[in-house]
Length: 222
Length: 222
DNA sequence: GGGAAGCTTAACGCAGCCTGAACCGGACGG
DNA sequence: CCGTCCGGTTCAGGCTGCGTTAAGCTTCCC
Image (tube, rainbow over the protein chains, first blue to last red):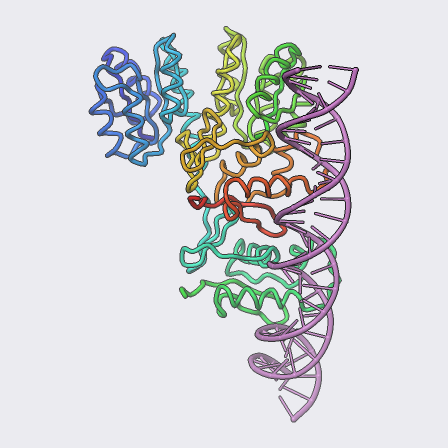
């Protein structure tokens, strides 16, 4: 857990650094806006604590520069007690949280933890299967990096398969999951869906296991 | 944007609700912990505001219950001025931010916006989607740099879509978030709203995914 | 070789969606 | 207190995409 602290007040900075180190954070400190901006742009931090009341370069500008450089790390800004406009400005620049001075260091740590926890929760859980990938969060399939257009039923079937790739999914299990509950289908509609899927993602991607069901294997690239 | 407010002080609750409604949030209110817990577990909210000082069931318990049930929505807790331990307890239970009473409603709204924005995966308060851009702080949409005039419902729908652009938003999720609480609408009013939106921001901007819902993609410039 | 299981293609019909226009209630303003 | 406007909903008509059916073909195994 690596944190960047941008704070010109040496005393306060030292206090924060110590507390953070006790809590097992790795901390880098920048004493002014220029250094802070540079470090934030070049190093990979999990979060940043940024004093808005910096001399020379305003903190909000530093933050804006980070965002412009594509840095998405969570940023907690520090403001003077009654600098309401600063706060708003900070949020406009892309801050994620703020704290007004003076504050308790425990509180800063708590906030930081909450920030990091939340931003970490956005790691997209991806399932890859050869050229095919599935983003469980958004439910989007991609083939060779290109989004795959699927119909509702195709999607359901492929989801079933990809969630348990390499293992055989029984025919019955598939129909049951795809056609919620009511089964009794003596038709071949599932086979039609499979055929259409095969045409889209590659003939060999879905292996058929006679008398049992289907199984998704590594999809060959194009 | 649907928010759950759990607050036993009716006066305060009413004040918050009004402010939130003015800011285009859809709000459900629970007057006690039991209702709050139940609503938070069963309905799909984008965020919750939770008073920790509830009678009977402590707010932290409500929050813990939500987390235990797998609810990941961002939660902002309200505490009395000097209830430091409450605060810590709240964060331990999984809160994402807090506010001490008394507070300015504008601040609550700002925090809420920041929370939602973050949980939607956007670090910066400005979301761009082709020619369309959205300022999450002010809630203003712009098309090709010109402010876009939207009605209340249009705005809510588009906000839902833009906060999770490129991903399919289920029909049900949309109606639920746009129409407060009571759903059960077997009408096509949502479709009408979508049609009107399309006319304003471009026919191809909102893709319809049959049987599932809609999805906002890069808006072509004029 | 024969039968069973599965594949594939094409056609059909309907559910789901779109949209214009009418309807209606509430919010203003005179 | 009554018109007007605005925005949300309802309705009807039309269209399209998708799931199903059916029929003929292929593959597998005894």
